[in-house]
Structures are given as C-alpha cells and as structure tokens.
Length: 510
Ligand SMILES: Cc1cc2nc3c(=O)[nH]c(=O)nc-3n(C[C@H](O)[C@H](O)[C@H](O)COP(=O)(O)OP(=O)(O)OC[C@H]3O[C@@H](n4cnc5c(N)ncnc54)[C@H](O)[C@@H]3O)c2cc1C
Image 1 (cartoon, rainbow, N blue to C red):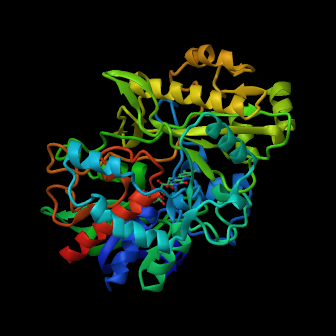
Image 2 (tube, rainbow, N blue to C red):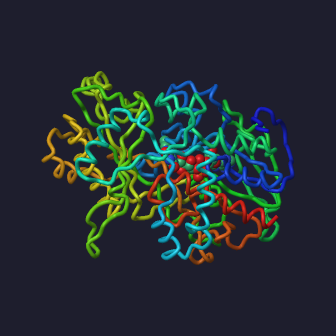
C-alpha cells in the first residue's frame, strides 16, 4: 500500500522486518526483493507520490514535484547543479532510461584496486539479466532516433569512433520527449512502474511525505527510526512516524544518504563518511543549425559515443577521454534557463529554438569531492581544477569536433563569458579560455555517489561487502554511496544490481 503523508495524523508507531529510507533505484529494488522473500517491508520517502495522471509535461510544474530542490540546488560554490529525485521512485521518474550494465573493466578495477568482494561480474550477471527482463531493457531501435541523434551518429562514424545504441528501459514508448518530466504514458520503466509497483503488490508499506530524521541506538544496534510526516503543500511537519525494524536500510541516494548518516553523528567513528564523492559533472555545448532539430522530441539518447569512456594516459600525462558523450535533450523552459545572456540576444536564441541542438558528456570523476555538514546544512564540494578540469576541457573539444561535423553553424558554451565559436579551428583556444572557477559554467551533476564507500573496515570505508555499516549490527546502505568510484556509465543498473546483493545480505540477517 502507498500511503500519503496527509493520511497520517498524530504520532504513529509501526513495527516491521525492514525499514528502507528512500524509494529510488536503490531502495525500491531492495524493498521489492525483500517483499518477494515474504518480508514485512516499510519504505519511507520524503517526497510525494505522483503517477502518470500527475505528469502534465509542463517543466516548471514537474520540476517542483519530482526534482529535489526544484532543480535549483547547487554545490557549495555553484560549481555544479545538483539534479536528484524527491518523490516515490526517486530520480528514475525523471531519468533518461539509459540502462548500461557496469562495464567489466570497472568491476575488475573495483575488485583489484579497492578489494571489493561479492560484486564481480559473475555475482552481478544474473541480477542484470533479471533487471533487464523486468525493465524491458532493449537496444534503441531506429524509430527512437531523433534528428540530433542521427547527426551525432553520422559524425561519430565519420571519425571512426566507437558509437553504440544506448540500452533503453521502455515499454511502448510514445516518443514524446518528456522523459524528464515523468512519463505520462507509463512507458518509461522507472522504479515507480516497476519495482515500487511490484513491492506494493507484494504487501510492502510505502509511505510518501515522510522524512527519516533520527536513528535511536541501543548499543551498536538501531532500535528505532524516527521520522517526520511532512505536509506536501507547506513542507511543515504534521506528525511523527516511529518505525521499529529488525534491519534498517538507508537508500536515500548519493546526496541524501551521506547527509542522513552525517546527521546521525557517525563521522567520528567513520572518517570516510562524506569523502570520495563523485557526481559525473556534465559539460554541454549548444549548437545552432540552419535547419530544425527539435531536440525535445523523441528519446534523449538513442546513440552514445563510447570511444572516450576510459581516460587515456601517456605515463602520468593525461592524453584524452574519461567520459561518455551523448546527444543532449533539453526542453524549452530548461533551455531558456541555461542559454546565456539576456535581452535581445537571448530572445533571438529563443526565437530560433527549433534550430538548436547540442551534446553533453558525463565526466568519470578522476578527483574526489566531499559532502559535509556545516551548522546542520549540507555542503557539497566538487573539484573542477586538476585532472577533472583536463577531462572537462577534452570533453568540450570532442563535442566541438562532433558538432561542427554535424553541420552546426555556431557553438555556444553557455559559460559566464558567453563563449561562442563559428569555426572548428577556434575550438582549442575557446576551450582553453573557459574559466573553470566556481559559478562560471552550467554543469549538471545527475549521478552522485561514493560517500559511504564499500571496503574491509572503517579505516578505508563506511560499509562492508554485505552493505552493513561498519561497527553496527543492523544498519545498511543500498545506493551508489557505496560505489568506490563512479561506474563510468549511467549508474541505474549498477545501483539496482548492488541492491540485489544488499537485499540478500539483509534477508540473511533477519
Ligand atoms: C535528469 C536525470 C537523468 C538521468 N538519466 C539517467 C539515465 O538515463 N540512466 C541512468 O542509469 N541514470 C540516470 N540518471 C541517474 C539515476 O536516475 C540515479 O542515479 C538513480 O535513479 C539514483 O537512485 P538512488 O536510489 O541512488 O537515489 P534517488 O533516486 O535519488 O532516490 C533516493 C530517494 O530518497 C529520498 N530521501 C532522501 N533523503 C530522505 C530522508 N531523509 N527520508 C526519506 N526519504 C529520503 C529522496 O527523496 C529520493 O526519492 C539520471 C538522473 C537525472 C537527475
């Protein structure tokens, strides 16, 4: 049953086998698996419960409902814009549905460099098989290819780059292009219509508008979890919910989980909590064409350039790569917000919006950031100098190459200096001139994680290979906070597969 906050009044107490904080890819998958094992599961989600009936395809409305911070949150110095979920189903409700398995080279690196056990290719493959079946993951077919994708594919092939169809979690896609506003057709296979729906059908109790606040300890065991029932309209507390569970799982996402655990005062015992943060900062370039592109129709990314997924080095010297490169898709209101300038120049861009295309890259963070609390307020640091900056610049250079090859007449970087170029030979100097200091660029950060990483003990990590927080009897983490690094591809399938492993550990401990 999915219960809204308004249905809870006063102070409620419930008992269960497992309480899960957060209902995104991590929490929903784990809740479903434990419900399948016959466990009594309670899920607490601080955001609202919205369904396809609520998804009106209007950007401002949907940003307010399903985006954490209404899409306006940034890192502490404005280096990156934080994009994350805040609703039943989490970020998957507004994700693009790109569904990559973790590359074997990344799993091997996690095992060799970080000593990760129990999450190798052999362990995860059966979970990937099932997740792909349940989410109808399939290669993007030709009908998914919009004009921007068609052009990026042609350019990448002309350069001889490795470009592949992006696996998609969709069933009966209407090709509306409104993936980021929540799928009004229930075609995108978000957690809302897959794992949440199945957990619900199996008897899990899912509470929206309930924010987990405090763990009550009896020695090293969590005896209870105290939560606030939030009024969705005013965000004011309307009651409390106390859950007594045998096992407690935090799956509040790459931003939410470290914040929640830091608020429990665990940093002293767990020095790695809040460290090793990654978020795949995303540099983009807008491109002006003579012909209509209409980037906001059909799916965002049918084809992806994998040529540069892994960074290449000559000895210690960075050469190139360390990102996925994709066609971009932004809807008109978001374009209005991220396109540079004001007044007549901005108006001219908006008048020509149909002829605007672009690309985006996910940087595989080479340098770690952090999340900490300052006076109880979350502060996120993302380093963009050093190697991350070199990778960013290379991603911009490659985007310039692709976009001119696709026939673009002008490229717009969207930085504070409003850098624009009209010829390929201007790219290098333009990219070198971009100021990477905070608040100078529009970089999204949609794939956070790493702040409760997995390892042997508290000297190198926060959770063990069974996802249990070191030094606790019954507290677990099941989301990308446990990854030792970013997975080098979009993370949703990796998160879900890890949750299968976490669910087995939690189940075994019951
Ligand atoms: C625009 C966009 C596009 C994306 N596209 C793709 C894509 O194509 N492919 C892909 O693989 N990935 C994509 N991602 C990333 C992917 O959606 C996320 O990595 C994934 O959904 C994260 O799952 P999660 O369970 O870790 O966290 P979330 O989905 O963020 O879920 C965590 C939930 O916990 C809740 N929560 C937090 N704190 C509390 C608390 N104290 N009490 C109760 N609840 C709490 C939050 O409200 C949230 O709903 C995209 C992300 C964005 C933003």
